[in-house]
Amino acid sequence: MDKYTAELKKAIAKMTGARVVADGTVKLRIRCVGYPESSEHYADAVVVSATSLTLSIDGTADSTVGASGVLAFATYDTLGELVDAINLSSNWQAEIVAGLRTDAINGAELLARTTSTFRMYQEVSLYADSSDSGVYQVAYLLEPNRPFEYVKGDLDYKSRRVGLMKAVGYINTSDSGTWDLNVYELKPDKASAYKTLSTESTADATASTGLGTKSDTPFFNADWGNSLLVIANDAAWADSGAYLEVQGMVE
Image (tube, rainbow, N blue to C red; front, side, top):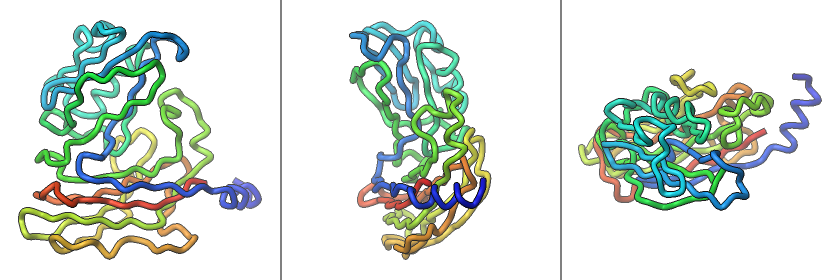
């Protein structure tokens, strides 16, 4: 990339970020694309914690997915396997958000989701159950791509990059120990943590001093097209009061 283009992207960079609390981590996003967006058809996604995800269209389980519309977590026991199974159907699209392909989902790692219908092409989030022993975390992803851009094979995200300006968190652990604030760089396939950029340990029931500052310069930049996964986690904790605040930018 030439110097002029790099400077232009920096000049028009957009700020982004969020405050994530217990049970607020988005692990997957899905949408139904079986009919045009303007149609009256509707879809649904029901998560039975520790058991399965059922996808349906117009009130009937979609037979193009899993076993008659049911994706059992005993069979698809990682985020990667679940996403791949969903994307095998031309009626659905799915992608991992704040997680890795290897993340387990065969316990109660995904938060239960009851019937709540949605229109075609509407983005729907599936959340982590932060109190499950396989999770114990709140996480947020700074991503250069727009929803489903990578899944569809669009390449625009490769011309964008994200930077972490500041991250702070708080966890009231149940083991009276310390908790960690970690930052990882991920490639678009989210197969694994491409780089570990920072690890900060903080005392129980104490807010972290934070990574980064309020300056206009990112504390970390990912490579072009990659994302930054920020995680506050511990081996054991109490959901109450847990949070993660992330400020970043996309250029």
